[in-house]
Image (cartoon, rainbow, N blue to C red; front, side, top):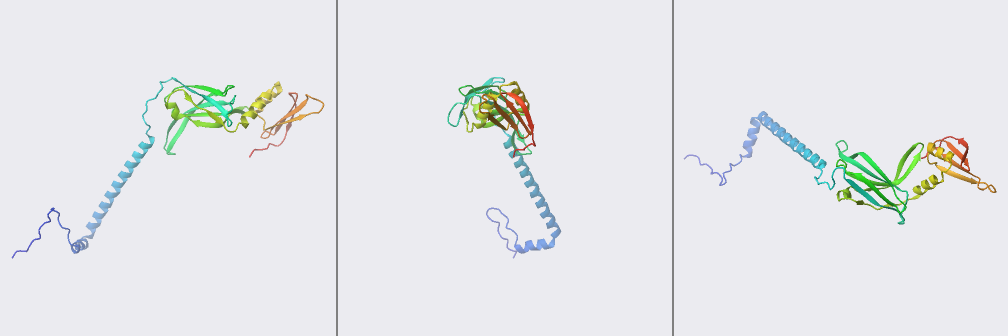
Length: 263
């Protein structure tokens, strides 16, 4: 009687060989099996590398993508930034300098984040009611906007804006002009000191020293009893090691000492 054959499964799948047959095949030709295993591993590594590369490309593309939104402004059209500056108590502050800082942003692959470059500033000074207005000619290359508020301080022959408050208004710019922003100066002490000192500079000697040295680190005043209005005022510049002594606005003496560095 011919040998009896096992029927194929209904779904047409071929049964797996017995475990003993697999062991026999592995003992019979280990080099061939090792080569097959190596080829399989290499194929899996190549496939995984491709997946990682594609994922990295997709991630960078997503990171650098910028939503395509229609600008509400035409090139060169003036965008108005306006508002009022007050102190923490709600009192309007006159003479505060407000700067619009516009910058371009781009992806830094080294830092893997967006950075701002080519920053430009337009300045305005608040009036007696604390109001300011700044006009910016629209340029589509600039996409980040900040309002800065503070006071200009002179050190030596260099002037710089001492920023006390900073506000990002980029989203509001996209909403249309005017861009209205109320700025609160939480610590007005520096502004008051600078304004008071500059207002007290009157004589030619005082103006000359101020133009050369800037705001002093300390001001001392000595009143002589019975000799009013004669008074001695000294301006101390610790970094420079200089003290300028004035009497009735006239420079009388310059003292030198070892510079004292601020911590």
